[in-house]
Amino acid sequence: MVTKTETTEIITEPRLQQASQPSFKRWIRHFCYLPASKRYFSKMDQNAIAEAVKQAEQGHVGEIQVVIEGYIPCALAYSMNTRQRAEQLFAELGVWDTEFNSGVLIYLNLCEQKVEIVIDRGIQKATTQQDWQAICDHMIRELKNKNYKQGVIVGVMEVVEILNRFYDDKVQDLENELSNQPIILN
Image (cartoon, rainbow, N blue to C red; front, side):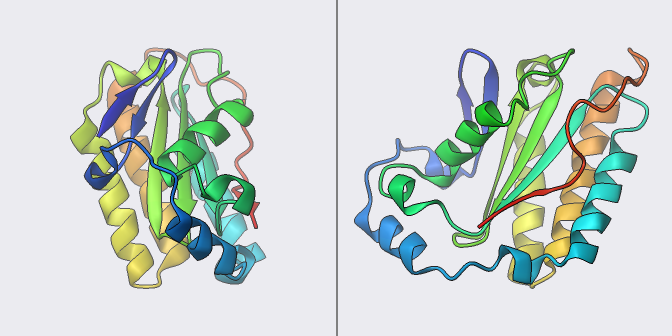
């Protein structure tokens, strides 16, 4: 599904097409979820993901930020689904604030095993929802097979294929505007 906002396109799974309704069931699921982000992603895994992002950002102005969250904080889980959480983090982390509007947020929620990709307005015109959905689906398959690190790295590499097609050396690679380290939340 593609949802347009003023500055971004949000790419999500088709079943999230309906507007998010407050959900007590979602709140309970996130409240009872044991923090697992650091257990699933060791320091070595985080460094491998950071290196993949660093390599992926070479040769174009696209910027990739990976956020891995165990669960949505309880204060937000009742009224916010993973799509809305990804959009919130996209804004809060300043992924939208790159010089060429070339930010991509890959958001992974371990509690719900969902992947959301938020792209900035500079990329939206040259891509399709199917491209981004394929990446989400592939990452989710890897997660279900318990290949957490590999799933994220494969997702990053698939995102860079799209960025390479879009930018096609239009602009020289500039300094790194976003951290390559994945952001691990709870």
